[in-house]
Image (cartoon, rainbow, N blue to C red; front, side, top):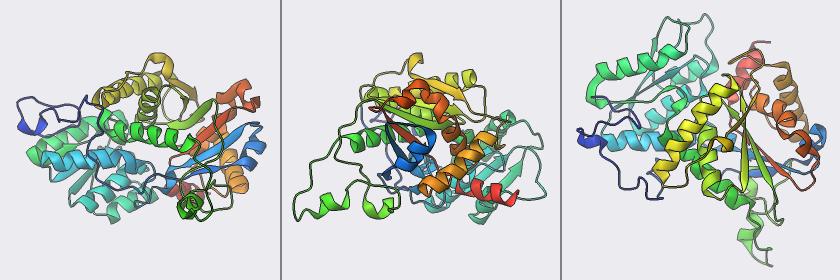
Length: 376
């Protein structure tokens, strides 16, 4: 029997409830990412968007593992679970442009696991950089020969069943409650970074290394904390595709007392469908972590799809150009750029609140940006 995260058979000793579940203890991690990721000031970007309050960028594009971006967080949990189950092969899938698939291939290679990727459709004439990366990292590529993305999850389960007990199946985008726990922890990480730190004392090298970031400085060199000012209300804006990132952030925000409002920008599905998926995943994540269960009111999603999944929007492309010019940040055109484009709509009148802190969660997607450049 193949093991699928969060779909366990109680008769299988590899699938018994783990001791950390429902105990308020984080699950085991395969330490892929360099954490915490930087939180940087973006005053020029705020000014260009008409945001009066403080604006920050959470740089999960700088997780430090391959070109995984934020996917490293959920893969830390999934790879650890695969190892714990005794699996020797990771099976997942998506579209040829999937960031998660190439990141999973890299993580599997790092962990010494075979990787089988199931892609929707048939082999394209021109390969997306993410597909090239997955091949380069040794993944076995299979095709559904059906353009319907929903069929990929069926094919993943089928392939895992054929491979037997050594297979660890992960649905598209790694969107499982277990994968979402990586972002639950990320929300707690952000909450810690937003807590004001003690003023640095003369000769205090640690405080100096973690001083406030600003545009034009390297977050990796300057440390990971924005310090020195007490924050009031906080809104976090994040792109939502398969839903795992926002689900974990919502779960973590609820666990930390709802001091942060998590707002999603749906980039691939209708907002109502996306919100339902996020709530379901967030509930499962909170149960695994042993924390308060999110409510429907905790999940808010704005439509940022534009022409559709994996297709750039005019709004997003304008936002990507603005982000580079104002903050020196590269955004992919089909994910985080769409979230930034939707940010003024998401904030609404709160955009004019000088006491509001707005955080844009940069999820990565560098190879998607490269694909966008190649398409021009």
